[in-house]
Image 1 (cartoon, rainbow, N blue to C red):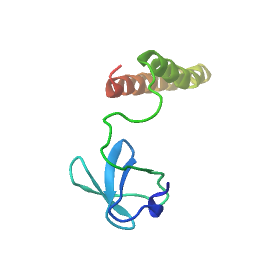
Image 2: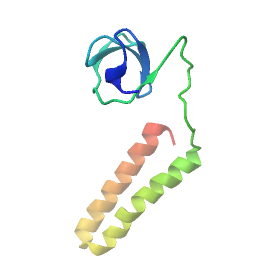
Image 3: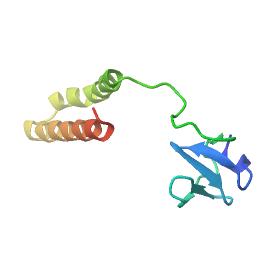
Image 4: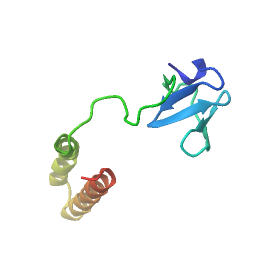
Length: 108
């Protein structure tokens, strides 16, 4: 359901959080009470009653996430072979920094 279709005061789930709609473009997060701007086109999930702690959807194993990350980075790594050595080294460094930050961020 789009954000615009929610009624004022209605609870909904969006981007891993639970909110209550307070205006045409605003909502209050239940976790900290802060007001957030929500795009009218945002796809939300109305919530009735208590909210479960876990997010709906398919959980990926750490191995699946690592494999997807490697698959995403492979074309960039192949591109290093087409560049001058100095540029190739800079790209490899950037790829490795990005991979490391991603793994740290999600706890891999």
